[in-house]
Structures are given as structure tokens and as C-alpha cells.
Length: 284
Image 1 (tube, rainbow, N blue to C red):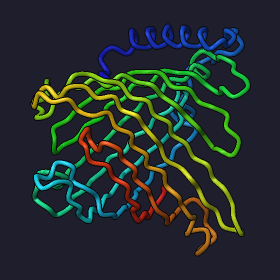
Image 2 (image 1 turned 180 degrees about the vertical axis):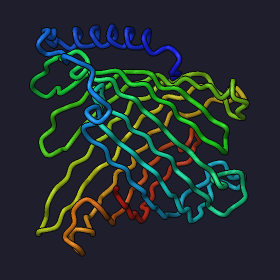
Image 3 (image 1 turned 60 degrees about the vertical axis):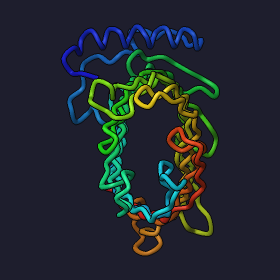
């Protein structure tokens, strides 16, 4: 998403949000619901958190000539989430190297960025019951090693789910732009459905969190190799223990736990993966 056409983009966003909310059955906002003035930068961000995550597990290379091979793969992730006056921002960047020079996970970097535009914040829409918010999302995915770039425009819904700090579903197109970027694996466009969540809980005086996401990705024909890629299901739930609180009494700073990766048809191949990884998280 470019930054060279902000005014038309805002107009289109507002129109799309109005249509989405009308479809959802929400009431229109009154003038009293709209902000009286544009907030300052300090007022715009109401929530912000940044994490550095370290993971280690034996992950499969689904493209290995002898079939899927496994290698201990350290992953360092920079992750950020913030809530702002127009919606939310979320991004992460994975840095990984499995030490096997086989063309997969070799000093690689992969990242995703999502901008969420909230109808409740932008238009003052009111919801009730299970539905919390409706909005539009603009996403970008990029990988260094495969020279991959994809765009994910779509819609999202936030839900009121008991016991969850948040529960969000989103439905996007998956537009492959690798062909314009010199990529070696461009394909026809597809679509993606994703659910992300976080459920904090307390047990025996200790604090925990169950969080993560699950996605279904519809793939189409790989134009470079003229082969059909399989649709995949990827789930990456994490179970975190607030070790910082247990050791120092300070909450939400240092976590230990595990991430379970379930990947059916990993990266569009016939390979399935089911693997636990060790997890350590530092939050700022």
C-alpha cells in the first residue's frame, strides 16, 4: 500500500466500511459519535507493545530432493502491535537460518504487515452481542530468500468471546506480486482466511496466556514451475508462562513457553508438519 494517495484512500476506506457495516446490520453514527478534532500523535496511539521472540525446533524442509528433511532452526522474531485512532497496526519479521545450505531457510528473513481500519473508530459505528467491530485490512507479506511479495486486501471482524482478550477473523485476497519483483516462484492469485486470538488466564497464582493464529490459504497454479500448489492449513498457537512475574514480580516482561506448529501441505507441498518449539519472549 503506497503513501502517495492518502485522501482518495481514506474516502474509499470510509465507503467500504459503510457498506460493510450496513451489511452487518449496525446503526449509523450520529455527529456526536464522531471526533471533534484530529488528535495529536501522542493521543493517536492508545496501546503499543513490541516483543522479541526466540524459538527453536526441528523444522522440515518440504523442498528437499530426498523428501522432507529436518533441521534445528533458530528463529528470532521482532513483533509489534498497536492500537491507534483509526484502528490497529500489526507486523512481525522472522530472522532464521537452519545452517543447512540447501536453498531453504538459509539466512532468510520473512515479514508480514497489516493495517486495520476500524468502523467503530472511523465512523462511530455501534455493535452489540458477539460482534465487536468490522473493518478493512491492508496487508503485505514479503520473504527475502524466495524473493516473494504478496498483498492481502480484505475485511476483518472483531468478536466478543468470553475469556479472550481479543478474537479476530479476517478474509483477504492473496495477490502475488513476485512476478513484478523478479521472484522465482510467482503464482496466480488466491485468498486467505485467518483467525487470531489471545486468552490470558491465571492458575495457582501464576499468569499464563494462550495465543496465536490459524489460517487457511487457497493457492493456485505456480506460474514459474507450471504446477498446482496445494491449499494449506497453518496453526501456530503459543502457550506462555509469565516467568518474569514468577521470578521478579514484574508482569508482562519475560515469558517462557512453547509454540506448536501444525502445517498441513507446508508451503503448498505434500509435506505435513507437527512440531513443538521452545519459546522465550521479551516484551517492551
